[in-house]
Amino acid sequence: MPTSCTSHVLVTGGSGFIGSHTVLELINQGHKVVVVDNLSNSCEEPLRRIEKLAGLNEESLPFHNVDLANIDDLRAVFKQYNFSSVIHFAALKAVGESVRVPLAYYRNNITGTLNLMDLMIEFGVKDIVFSSSATVYKSDPDGRPFREDSELGCTSPYGRTKLYMESIIRDVVGAESGWNAIMLRYFNPTGAHESGTMGEDPCQIPNNLMPYVSQVAIGKLDNVHVFGNDYNTRDGTGVRDYIHVMDLAEAHVIALERLTGNHGYEVFNLGSGAGQSVLEMIDAMSIACGHKIPYVVDPRRSGDIDTIVCDPKKANEVLGFKVSRDLTKMCTDLWRWQVANPEGYNQ
Ligand code: NAD
Ligand code: UFG
Image (cartoon, rainbow, N blue to C red; front, side, top):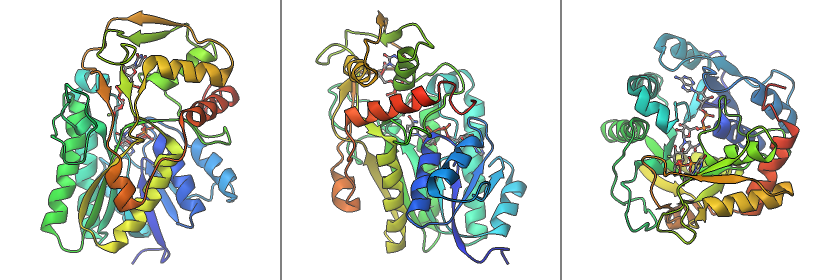
């Protein structure tokens, strides 16, 4: 018997960038949350900020510093609570690093998911929302928007772990009765909570465009390196579909609530459906911070393609989800976070 009878949502990776914003939104929508994270790419400070923003007592948000690879430690958490559902964010996510150390990615992401699914079966927890990615789609040379039924195919070990994790979950839903699973394929998350107290805190020099741009804007880095201006796009730079992290957080709450409708296994894209180029993002961020952000043009980054945008129709129609925060809001919120937290959570 669990120590706690109250029904909780287990959030793995809940102190990370997207997880922490989602935890705040879940609490604000009345859900009880338990966070499990091994802090390999985060720290506990976002949890303290969540407590403040949600009006909770300090250190009252249940948190367990557990590695999903350790099934006994994870089992102890399952024993302690009565979980109704799981949102599974915990994963390593750096594409380049995954090419250098593929086994670390397979071990962490796949073993963690296998252990989690084993325990969900053991404890009769049958509802899961999973963090997937646009990276699971096979690249389209014509840059057409990806639909959920577009062809799949990955080019990096990281991408393959996401595809395998989706497959593991789909196979469990097929084999067991009463399971519901929603795969959310995010496009390019950015922005921050509008309070300026929560945001993305890359542990090293950022790999992704927007945290890099924001660190140049505040003077921590010298120039943005634009990876190629000879793509087949309107200004020659790569086009991506950016989505505000709070829109993503809201989509997770909608997805979680849909699980109770017994729809089995479902997949949804989460993006705006519109694409912005690298130069357009630098311009938008320059407006947000009030000064020109310097950049230099470098050669293309290996593995990048012209355009990655989603068709958001299925999420609009089935989940009733539509992004509500535009590019200006993404950049002003990102800038507010950057100015208030120049060293991220390590103040
Ligand atoms: P993040 O690194 O900020 O968060 C992931 C969290 O998981 C971290 O706090 C990390 O410490 C934790 N973690 C990793 N391995 C763990 C393990 N074995 N046990 C326990 N905790 C572990 O990343 P994020 O940007 O918040 O991404 C969350 C999820 O969304 C990831 O699964 C990622 O693959 C996916 N995703 C992210 C993006 C993006 O651009 N940020 C795009 C598409 C999909
Ligand atoms: N870019 C630069 N300079 C940088 C970083 C990026 O010019 O310093 C360009 C890239 O070439 C690309 C665009 O900015 O055209 C976006 O690059 P990101 O690295 O920010 O994002 P990606 O689209 O490459 O990948 C991200 C995540 C993946 C996820 C994918 C989903 O890193 O994990 O979005 O679309 F799968």
